[in-house]
Amino acid sequence: MDDDPQMQPVDPAMVRYLRVLVTALSATMIIGFIIIVALFVTRFAGAPDVALPDAIALPDGAKAEAFTQGRDWYAVVTEADNILIYDRLTGQLRQTVRIDITK
Image (cartoon, rainbow, N blue to C red; front, side, top):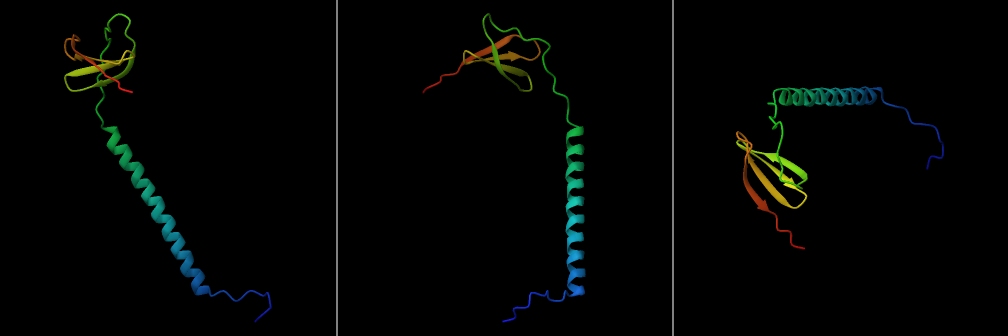
């Protein structure tokens, strides 16, 4: 065995090859990141604005917990586990759904 702690010579061609590989990997990662950012910007920049109602008349004592909407309706989930479905055009209450929670 060789007990001499001296380092073995480094092959310059291998160092050059590794430098090219690291540079190529770095360039690929940077270009990929730029493409991902560009895709996010182009996809979300043209998203339509969500039209929310100006005011919602909840029944007395009802407190809103969640809100969702469809094309011609919107719904409010209350703390009392009711879903109140309203007409988007008139703002009138269409339907009330009671959520049955079983434990």
